Image 1 (cartoon, rainbow, N blue to C red):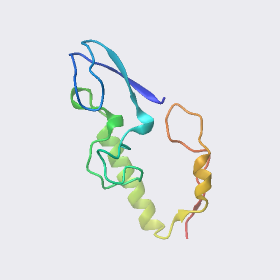
Image 2: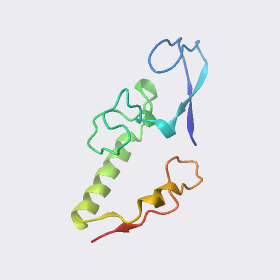
Image 3: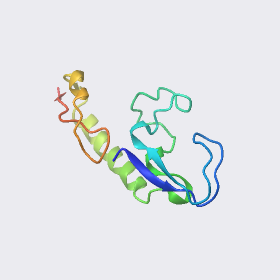
Length: 116
């Protein structure tokens, strides 16, 4: 899924999107979530310490209930991997260009990693 539908329950103006009338439907482009260089430093890089809220998880009353669980899971997995394999690195960055057709954006066919 490359866009997440959102319903504007009240008239919206300004921000990063054009004005929306009440009850209009808009799509949030998840492929570009958190990659806006006007808002984020080094927007093109994965930064697990970035304290900004992920746009992919929604905002305000529509914030994803599973976002905190996802963040905890990522912290546990990435922490365990870096402790176990401190010298891990990508073997072939060119492989990142082979995208996996999927509902979830930014997934790859393979991710060859040297564990050390």
